[in-house]
Length: 467
Ligand SMILES: Cc1cc2nc3c(=O)[nH]c(=O)nc-3n(C[C@H](O)[C@H](O)[C@H](O)COP(=O)(O)OP(=O)(O)OC[C@H]3O[C@@H](n4cnc5c(N)ncnc54)[C@H](O)[C@@H]3O)c2cc1C
Image (cartoon, rainbow, N blue to C red):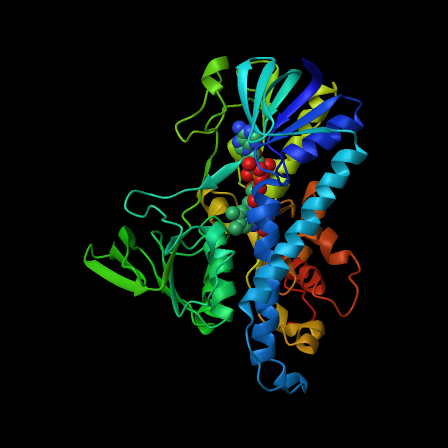
């Protein structure tokens, strides 16, 4: 039987990063993946394909609505959805083949098949063609990720009642789509189709979109998406989603508990994701899970079985690719006897709509709830020369800093390129910068990053120069 130092089950951004870091640290490493294609949800049906379609649809939207203003005329503009989906698949293939290359480069053995525990050091791999094989691991890492969630009455049939996975490969631009859930995935994929001409109706249980982010950001994003044609229905509890043959009928209770119904071509169910441990044989080794089905771990991501760790979407915390990757690195380093650390408070959140939304640290609502005294600095994107030059004038940067010490407690932003700008906020907060520190740092002109400096200046005594 093949013996390894580290065996990792699941090849998403948690598992494959853990495998590479383990190999770098000199461990003999095996990576087990049930699908033929490595990279997990993120590369195959998540982050990468959704961003490919968001970029393609944004090009179309700009060509249709904004090119004239820049002096670019065109006629016969058309959407070729088949080509968009084909390009998305090519981007996925290239990205996945990059992971194959990295596995070979780092001499990681990849075993294709379903991994399941036999005992605490043995994993059985059951492949479609390869049959069954058992391997041994001194340490085993569970990185089996998540799958789309749904509630009773809205079970996806994957034809008309779809999840994000099907929304990434539709063969027609729907006339109407109902999106159940106003979270990140629903808004991103809703945006793709809204830009291509679909009428999007969002049904949300809460009273805001992106409820876990700073409320100002949700309100601002809602305004822009409304202009793009989104319709929002808050405090709506979906009861039933039915495939009517040519479309869908959705029944919900509105905020007065009155029954209301909606009709559309498709219903995208995007009410979060749930941890995936099916067929893993957790019971064979007595690994504990919590009420939500997440594998329980301590602060070193160790399960209740000492040599078995768990990372990524299958454990508690934000379901984000970069969080999974940080955890993959951490576990490999802990196995190597190092003392790594993750600052979970500083894992940034991003929504890749247009405008993009990004945030890190405490939200205003969290600070208010905790009774912490803070001051706020804001700066509108439209006051930037760079924003006017490109025409992307929408949004703002908001900085929350401790009232006494001036330490930055949270940075939230909405606008062009904020998905990239948030990295500056993470660096500043990792080094426990004050708003004054950021305000005094030179920011290249003209850039969107100047809004971060100006918001910091606003937080430190209303001395923003350009607003
Ligand atoms: C549409 C969409 C867009 C997203 N966009 C973003 C984004 O922009 N940014 C971001 O940070 N996050 C995004 N996410 C979330 C991100 O994809 C996940 O947080 C991330 O993939 C989690 O990584 P993971 O390694 O924990 O698990 P996964 O990526 O889910 O990988 C788990 C892997 O384990 C395999 N597996 C499961 N069980 C077994 C078994 N028993 N044996 C063998 N293999 C097994 C699965 O096949 C899968 O390949 C998005 C998700 C979706 C659905």
